[in-house]
Amino acid sequence: MKKTTVLLCAAASLTLASMTASAMAQSAAEPSGSGGAGFAGAGDADGAFITPGKFSEPTGEKMYKRVCAGCHMSDAKGAQGAGMYPALAGDPNLASGDYAVYVVLKGLHGMPAVGRMMSDQQVADVVNYVRTNFGNKYKDRVTAAQVKDVR
Ligand code: HEC
Image (cartoon, rainbow, N blue to C red; front, side, top):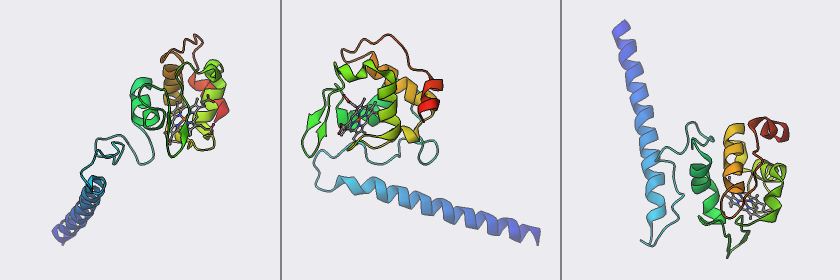
């Protein structure tokens, strides 16, 4: 009797696992289409999310490359095309750490509120990274507590 229950449970979780696996395989296969250089941000098969909707990147630099560079470019010089992605390189608006935190947490026009999927520390790290790289030399560091207040 007990054995049957255990077996049934095992079967059920196997089904779930294979459903998840095939869903993942499907979404991983989608972007390839025409064989061109597709957008690299597709899919989270490389473990970008620990839990759905949360980024797992451990440093500001990795977070920038993973999340921000898709729009602001890896050299932070921005881009113009279907939309206008402002340069964060040498950006005088970054003089205010609070402003940068606010934009990351709340979004701004065409920029989504990506900070909602980050911890306070991750937001602080990525903002500090941007404010001390790409020709930006702002010495004051944003703290997780500051991020919490803005959130
Ligand atoms: C989906 C595209 C996209 C992503 C991803 C994105 N941004 Fe943006 N970002 C924008 C756009 C578009 C604007 C300009 C919004 C406006 O002013 O209309 C912007 C504006 C900003 C600004 C304000 C710049 C200024 O001079 O006022 C900051 C700061 C910023 N982004 C930081 C970041 C950081 C840090 C990340 C990663 C954590 C990030 N962005 C991810 C699209 C994006």
